[in-house]
Image (tube, rainbow, N blue to C red):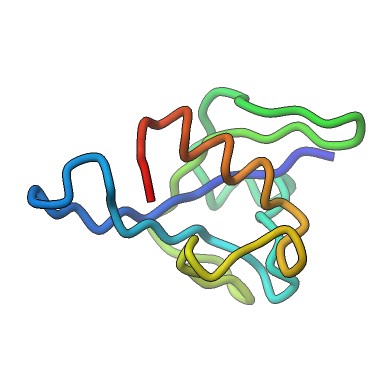
Length: 96
């Protein structure tokens, strides 16, 4: 399976590397699958598990049944893709 990491960052120069970050997730708090790639601009892969490969992506319009969820509200218990999201945030150089 291939999934996409789409982030929205609220840039505030006063925060420096610490930013307010939200991630596009579906109703199960999972990253969208790459099968909807006509909606997304897909970038490089950044994280892999035995069953899933994750890619950076962007989109201009969010697909149905998805919404941006603040990263601070996510944890291992409520988000199956939490470890991949944490890896992406670190790779992008952000702190929370």
